[in-house]
Image 1: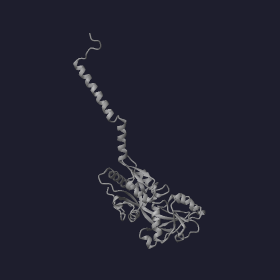
Image 2 (image 1 turned 90 degrees about the vertical axis):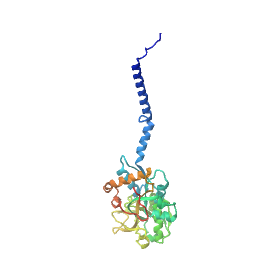
Image 3 (image 1 turned 60 degrees about the horizontal axis):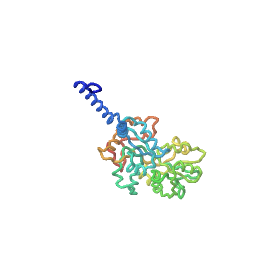
Image 4 (image 1 turned 180 degrees about the vertical axis):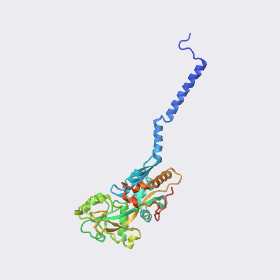
Length: 323
C-alpha cells in the first residue's frame, strides 16, 4: 500500500503543471526585467544620460559660470540636464572640449581659436571644435592701484594676468603686445591677485569678464583702486570691439564720465561630433532646448548679459554646429 496523497486525476494534474510553469515564468521575468535592481539601475542610467551634457565654464567670480548656471536652471527637465563645471579659462576649456571625458560644451573667448592655431597648441583644432552660438561681449578690465593713471604706466611693472592657459592671460598678452607694452606677468588666481593689489604688491590685474564682474563688487571707494582706460587704437580694434564701463557698472572704481575699454566675444562651443552619433544627438537636443526656451533667459533673475545674445549671430573663423 502506498502512503501519502492519492495521485491527482489527469485533468487536475495538467492544471497544476500549467500553474507551476506560469509561476516559474513570472519569476524568470522578474529576475531579468523590472524586478531586477541591476536592470532597473541600468534603465535609470540610460534615461539620465540620454539628455545630460557637461558644460565647462569659468571661475566662481566670473560671468561664464553664472551663464552656465542659468543654462542649467532654465533647461533642466526630463529631456535635458546641464552639468555646469568650473573651468580654468578659454585655452584650457578648448582643450577640455576636445579631450576631457564628460565635457560636451564649453564657454570660450572668440579669439581663442585663432590663438590656438597661431601657437599650434592642438592639431586640427579648427575642424574639431565648432560653435553653438555667440553669447555676448566680454570687457577687458585693467584694475590698477593708486598712482597708476594710464595703461602705459604699467610698463615694467608686475601685473597679474590670471592663471596660465586662461583666456585672460591670452588676451592680456595680445593687448599688451598690440600696445607695445612689456610687463612682469604674474599668474595668480584673481581673488588672490585682488588682495595683492590692495597691499600694493602688484601694479594692476587684468580680468576679461562680462560686466558687472562679481570680483569687483566688494571694492570700497577709499581703497583708491580704479579701472584704467584702454585706448581704442587701430592695433586693438583689428581684433577687439570698443566698449565702456559706466559708473553704474562699478560705482567704486569708475569715474562719472566712464572709462573706455575693449571687448571680446564669448562663444558657446562644442566638439564636432559625427552626425548620428549619441554625443551629437545629446548636443542637438541641448541646442533645440536652448532655442525653444530662449525667452526665459531674458527675464530676471537671469544674468543681464543674456540680453546681448543673438542666437543667429555668426562668429568669424568658426564653423557652426549643425543640429
